[in-house]
Image (cartoon, rainbow, N blue to C red; front, side, top):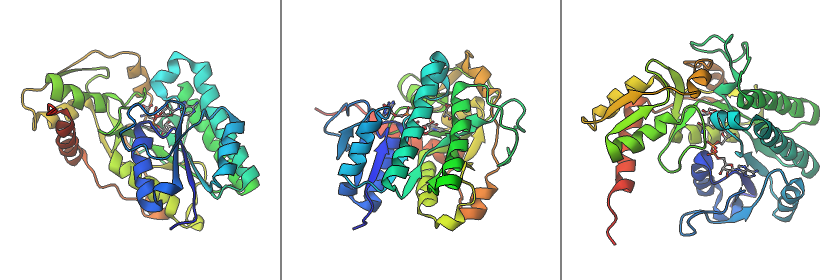
Length: 321
Ligand code: NAD
Ligand code: SER
């Protein structure tokens, strides 16, 4: 059994739901504590070891770290891009104060390793949109993107000045079936599957032709674990690594779904999220991650679509009572 004790902050969200299970598989159930500000909705699900934690409460964070001799923290709590624009002041506070609390308690308590995700949202209108390089113009227009860019700077700063072993990925839009997404611009690529299976139709809030970088959750989880397991001297980027899975636009995704559900139809009614997507990259150059710690995605559009439909169909079958 590993000596590591892991604390996951925001464990009940889209990523945390799956990352918690993956970490428990690696480290053992008793070594991975899930925390969140909301209570688990279904006590019968696989939440396991759970503690309430509002990450803005630094004293409670310090208490849990001390009490359980935590050695690694995965900070997943955040307000995402679309939701952030509804309340920019709070999005800034949560996204920045959460990271500051984790970094400061980590220094105090000698936490061994931290994972904190950034996003493609750090880029903006003057960033090259095709094959966006690791290091380039980053001029985000959303409060979410601004907070992620500032977070990347703090991450590198704490690494350089205090030796904190913090690691980070700029996740693309993530697609998954176990938990719903939490309010991002890329959420259409999850919602479309639920609507296709239940109603055979979907109205997309992004226009046809809006290419965005995306990734299927199994690749996102594997990339996170591979980054965190890599030897420290291989991690050359201490702000955040570009990460790439696939790139598609809504029409391509709809046509891929139609291969499985031929009667599925989609129309378009763009809203404010179009303006966010229009200033994000369309594809990402992640060669630095490949070079430094061997990153390679496994899922393309066809394979992801098939797997999403297969797994969601199982959960949407009428339940026998
Ligand atoms: P999510 O919104 O699905 O989950 C966030 C979780 O944090 C929720 O369970 C929420 O209850 C919890 N939370 C909110 N406020 C909290 C607080 N004060 N204290 C403790 N917990 C709190 O988000 P996600 O999609 O799982 O994203 C996790 C991280 O990955 C975020 O930093 C996000 O910016 C980043 N990311 C996600 C994507 C994506 O497509 N999902 C893409 C890029 C980056
Ligand atoms: N999927 C996220 C969002 O749309 C990207 O960080 O906000």
